[in-house]
Amino acid sequence: MNIAAMNNVVYGYDGVPVIHNVSLRIESGEFIAVSGPNGAAKSTLLRLLLGLVKPWSGEVSYAPDFNRKAIGYLPQQAASFNSGFPSKVIELVRSGCYPKLGLFRRFGAEQHALVEWSLRRAGMWEYRSRKIGGLSGGQKQKACIARVMAQQPDLVVLDEPVTGMDAGSRLQFYQWMRDYVSADARRTVLMVTHGLDEARPYLDRVIRLEGKEEDCQCFTSNSCSAPFGQEVLLH
Amino acid sequence: MLHFEFMQRAFWAGGLIALIAPILGVFLVLRRQSLMADTLSHVSMAGVALGSVLHMSPVLAGFLFAVIGGIAIEQLRRSYRAYSEVPVAIIMTSGLALAMVLMSMKSNLSKSFSSYLFGSIVAVNPLQLMIIAAVTAGGLIFFAVFRRHLYTLTFDEETAAVGGVQVKLLTFAFAVMSGLIVAAAMPIVGVLLVSALIVLPSAFALRFAGGFLQACILAVCAGLTGVFGGLTASYYTDTPPGGTIALTLLLILLAGIAVQKVGQRRRQRHLGEAVRAVPSASRQVMSTSYQEEETNVS
Image (tube, rainbow over the protein chains, first blue to last red):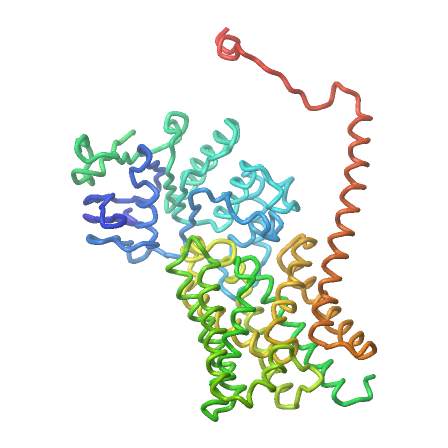
């Protein structure tokens, strides 16, 4: 089932377009990686999809029955937050449940269970009472991932989620995302990554963004439109 | 001391402000806007001056200006994303300049202005007390109702936006709230020391608090102690109340830092000895290998 689509999207910075006419579709039940060299506008692609920036032209649309509050987002360098922020790890992860709870709904047993599940899968349960500012870079990253996952999003959007994580943690993380997508057909994970080689066995699809317009050819996939967003199907 | 009605009012006014200002301070400090309070108080003073020049209610004009100043800073913050202190500086200068020019238009104003600059908590009248009570109640409700959204927003605006927080609306409301609280606190400690009540307690709390709620509670406790302690001290030593309150808050902060430093050092020494006592085999292992690749292959 199609949950989101971008049609002929153009966007850029300071008058210079970095996204040229990209079209793509996000299906539910997929674990997708976005890859490409530095400056290929991978993060920008995510931000356009999330509606954090508006395209110059073209459109970003979501399926009518898709709940926009069921999107979880991990920004790039999520771990570079203000280290003086007075919060325990578990408090931060709990805040992942807030989008679905809104202002007043009670934080109940279901949420507590989700928080514990998320912390355990991220390998951060033992650190739950630590202050987030005192964690290492990789641990901060894991805490932020746990926060996103505690939300139980239908669409998980992650920008370089494994930054600072050791090899074992990275593979555990890919396996978690694989399990998460496989457990429910409505779920999708979309992540920007530079570690395509190690993530490949877990992925369903790779969206490759090429940095330079002139040497980009578009040679695959139903949903790609030249000259920018080529997709490679990996099944 | 409390048999004087003016001292009772001073305690009430100070106590009410000390309930709300430190909570605002926690958010301002975390948003890197700790000078916001100072700025808004300068702007508010310009409002007071304009109010008296135009024969409006100075109190009302002060509130209005503080709120407008808060919104203006919020707007400027969007255009100076990378330098969040610049908008604060711009508005602070503008506010002070405007206040100076307006004050010069009415020469008989300068005397009453010294009471705005340095505060006159012991001269709080019943109307001001009611205003302070209303602002404090409104502020507490605001922070309680939006606590989840504010936590998310303060941590990271973009994830908050994706999570369904109306970022623009909430920051707008926050700016309005800051303006109201600053304008209400101004008569108590004065324009120059508003930051003392807003920033010092949270600076204290942020050093100790393990969690977010704990930070807010600790800040309020520090604020209340500072205000009541400062008021009492100023009554018995006949010193200006605003300055005495600020100094008391500073003392609390310094004492906190000192206690923490000593505690830390003691803990470190203790842990250091504990680690040394462990047999060397179970200690952290450091090794250097230049042949990792080959070892793995074979």
